[in-house]
Image (cartoon, rainbow, N blue to C red):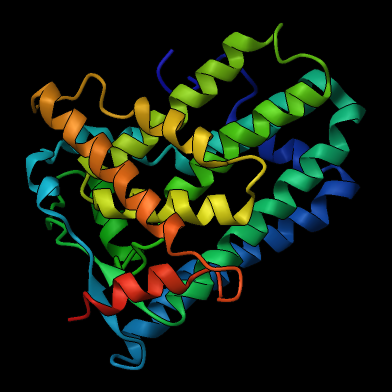
Length: 285
């Protein structure tokens, strides 16, 4: 399995319909959608209409140049939202009423993830050099909807980390961590695959991955402590496409080193986003 492939759980459409037809989940789902629209799309497009009000930083790293632009990875990249929706569908299909409370928490937490990321975006936007490629209609949609000003922290990476760690935690709470170990591994592999995809389609930098990992360690230290961050990074670019395995090792080393840098500069008497804002301030246009 490569990315929690369709067919091994309820489809995205069925999963979504299952959620909105459950009264206990409908409200959290609507609030989550509103949070996504407000904290990602509206905030970003408002910044385009009012240039200069929020500073913008360039957050690329030289290692990004060695990662090739591979357009066909866009299919995996665009599975970002359907991926976690299918996870919710799997839980509801398998556990029925038992899953309602943990799924509600899952959706509420997804809402908060967007709000937490927006705390940084509202103070300092960030971008990378993204090729203008529209031969594939999927990229045309990306260019139209995403002005590419919210790179640090990466919502994509944050959601992937939350999805696999929370999925594993829910199965653990049901006593099924061992019996469903294959499913947990598939979901983790999917999260890794989508994280790689965001770099292959040039939506983010390797720096964004480290910043997002730091954000998730502050968002939920119990689910994503440093040891889990190390494990997650160890799975990235193990078999890279279009560049040498040695470069994959260098990318992993850079990501975990930058993650540790952010963690080391995090102080209990300072806002959680201080290390990220310092990093962004040094890279303003």
